[in-house]
Image 1 (cartoon, rainbow, N blue to C red):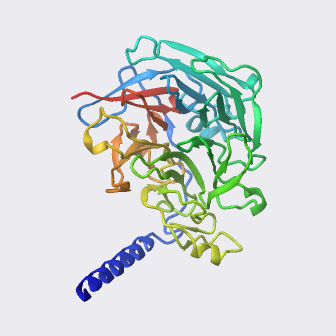
Image 2 (image 1 turned 135 degrees about the horizontal axis):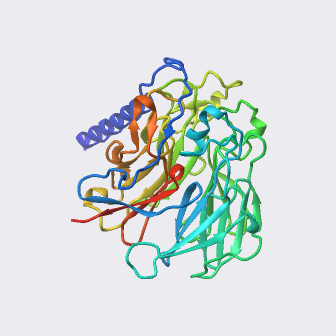
Image 3 (image 1 turned 180 degrees about the horizontal axis):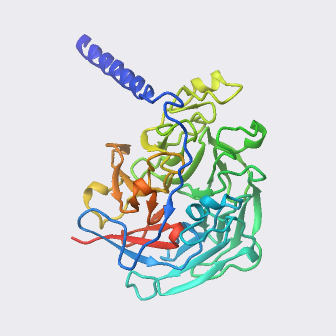
Length: 427
């Protein structure tokens, strides 16, 4: 009996030591390297060019001709909805093409505010029906996250949660959406996207809202209900903060084995090339993840005044390092059957790519293996070939959202080249 007690005690002690080591991840000091502004130059894809996937996979163009396709949502009947939106702000001429897209050097970032419906009626794996599902006339304002619950279609504008009456198979929304909830936007709205996900029984909706600024430099009053994942009832009532301190959570999904909510988070800028790592983390109800006071646990951000030591002590350390400045956005756990077994229940993360690092980072899709509901390895490259010449900051495109289709293939939006790529596996 004493031996068993000693073994258990040793194991608990070892777990504690390992947790401390994880929390004390070795990071460079702030400003160990100079912060740079280093936008990529998007040159697009020539005919026949595609991203590169591992052996056995095929990458094909699923659809094109969009206007900044950011996010997708797959309806149970197989329809795919594509939200076309962008930030709305003035940008310098010298970086216009890099931010807005290949061949477009406007001084104003334009948001199409359109949702397009794609439908495959002949089951050949490609959409043969394309309809305009919703527009500004329906009240869209930088739409992003989408959701169907029963006879309702939900969309998250940058400034509000809307819902519309919806019937399965419908190809167009009618009228203006009913506003259920105001969401924080306003003058300082650096992270404008608002993603949506529902729980298993559709009794709660979760809304990912990024911070309005980099590190609350415009004041904490600007950050109310920001850098949070919010929880509401389907009728918009019962608003509460589910988790906080998440600088810019975008992709959200439920881990298949544990039914735990996970999110991909963009961390802060302007501390140097290798600070701060973007991350993939499980989301604990009531959990605090550091922003703006600290990062990756209790690493204090020297720019934030006043500090909040009591809150910093409660900071949760994220599980998976996704690299600094990678702009990790899309997140999808793989539950299909067509990919090899190594991908089962693992997470695919789309990285939009850096603007604050030299050399550039991201511009790819990575895969994080999972076992028993927990990450079982580091993030590994899955879909590459977006970077043309890192020395010249040239890239073909920029990945954003990733979803799984019923046949087990993946779809990926490439917003700056207005494409959607399909990744399939054939033995």
